[in-house]
Image 1 (tube, one colour):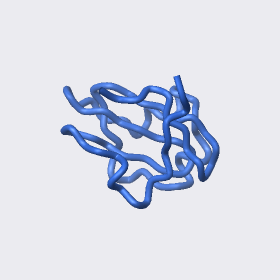
Image 2 (cartoon, rainbow, N blue to C red; image 1 turned 120 degrees about the horizontal axis):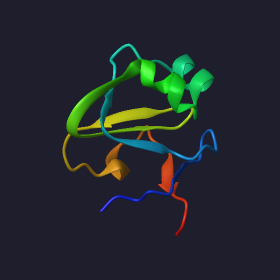
Image 3 (tube, rainbow, N blue to C red; image 1 turned 180 degrees about the vertical axis):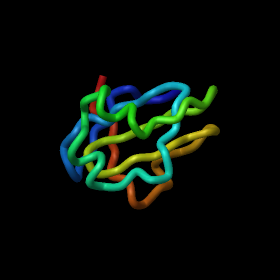
Image 4 (cartoon, helix red, strand yellow; image 1 turned 135 degrees about the vertical axis):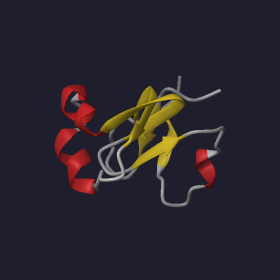
Length: 83
């Protein structure tokens, strides 16, 4: 199961998730800072990949291809926003 209410404690943004997409390798901090949370702008760097999931807030992003415990990533500051 995946929490769909993730929130970043660094930028205080809700973490968006996109099923069946990954982020292009050219993504950088300024891209997300300037384009979150507007899906129409984010699509420019989204790549369709069945079974994957793209996550992003305004300061961090991840492409996940397999079951992953995001709590083990020390760079992420994402927490459950409560249900």
